[in-house]
Image (cartoon, rainbow, N blue to C red; front, side):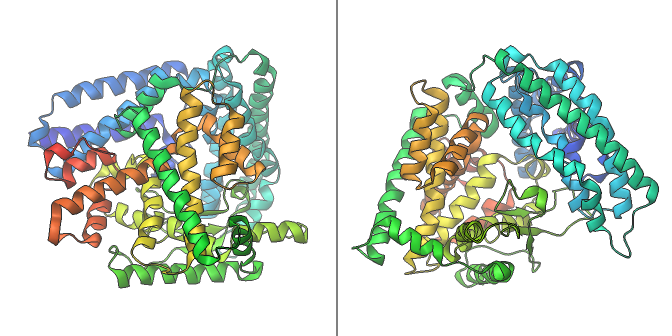
Length: 557
């Protein structure tokens, strides 16, 4: 009885959650919610809070031990999802103290990029979305208690939203570029778009103007403090260990990787500095016109290595399409994997977006941009984004039996796994002897190590300043000043970006314990296949299912 009761409870949760957050459900592939955005009244938010609490209470009546293995995982991930949402409402007070809580509905790219329906239908649904932004942002202004907001969050909100104004002003051109002979848009739909974009621009502009006016009133600190930071990890990620232990692990991993970097540099040329070697690596890059072709070759190389090395199963022959990043996304991503949502039935293609240099740039600007896509760096980025990183994870995730894990996977699994595989590939011989590749790979790991350290220190140590964070990114992650500033600022509004490195460390610890337990029967491929079969649940939960020894379950790091 517990099994059927739980499944009924779980299905009801998904339906109610989607009704409160239709835009998120739409993004996951639930196309019935096209054209709908959340209604952020505080009364409705409190009603959702009540629903979360009653669902938690209902879960307590379920006999966990009578559930199937898949339902046990669904049960625990559902608990995590509810705890996370309650943390945002009760502890962070996101809807009354953080304008970033209201950013997402302004980003309307899903209607343009995902071909889930004929273009005319998608633009008609976009029209419904745009016209609702007026009420949405009026409600946001009403909800926010400005004295309880942090200026850093407000400034980031302005940065994120300001790029949408010129995009919306020219949206007719963007839409016209999508038209084809068999995919035309009706005149009435286009006329509505021209009218509704003005409503959206007015709503977003009003919200931004209110933020600018209220900036002097904002007195709150972005710093979470020890208690809230620890609770964030416990509720959102199921990581319940002292912050000091996490910080020590991150600092130790940073020192290890810096030593590996020095070792790789000395093997290339002991008489040259690391900076000189880095410059040489960056200057060896594809031409702009061959960037997509070279990236496609790399994906095939990576995929073939996975097969030959028995690293992991590849459950599909379908490859992601390598293509130029749509212009609206280019300010946010150099390279990005865009996979279908877990509920998608129609727009099932995956795209690996690469941002080319813009035609209007100077030759120097183009060269500096292409240096980011140097051959070794692009190969490592492609391992993270495609094989065996995010794209391969997506292929396994779509086949996972755990609905909750597919829908509500956690930050540290998605990003931690993708970072883990970069190092794991090197360890089993990918690009063996190519120490320039090793340096490029270590750069990505060092960046994530510094993120972990900076996130904890900025939020829990009042004496650790933003400038100290910038200097750390410059010194230990070898970033230029401008990029270091961006990375440090991100910690003020996304403290969870420590999850890249934290997730990697959690996977590596699980691997050590799993290998020890399996002994002579251990297989790296079997480990990866089992790991990915669960979707993306918290690693501390997975330890209960992948390790036989109960005494090892709590030893997560």
